[in-house]
Image (cartoon, rainbow, N blue to C red; front, side, top):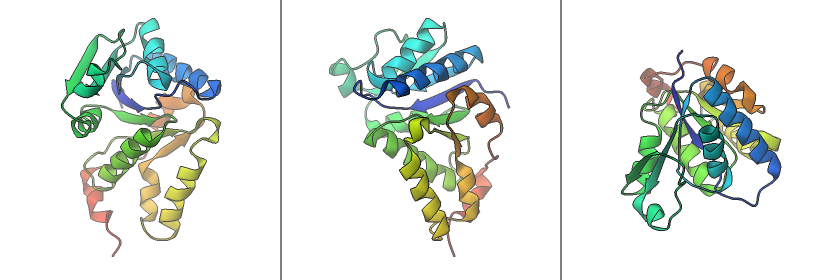
Length: 195
């Protein structure tokens, strides 16, 4: 599959372990090297800002999506040339999933969790069908992965739903992870319920 554009969910905190920044840089460099455009939340700090800095420094394409209230608070990355300013968070999340070839989740807080779980839900319903990659840096997402697996083990989701996401630890493996993800289609909606 041709990978042209991805969305990346990630943290807006500058106070986190440097290992997350190092991994984000590798991710950004790998995406640019492979000619992949990057859609993100538009922020100037944390992993969002570091990802944008990396992509821009390497002559890649960065696309920000941000609600107007965040722009008014001057939270946007000044170096990003392509910006979509939208009315609210719901519109922002919807646009994150439009026209992308994959969704990548780096470590983040409640906003990242919420965006990720909405995308997983839409994939289970066959509405979003692209690869979803969890970049489990420093084993950050271990509890979330255990929770997802427990939901399958205890029959809240089907066994096939484990195939909705792919987990990697090395961000340099992102292209391979996307390419080798289990194909998904709108027809998977038929398996959404647990009868």
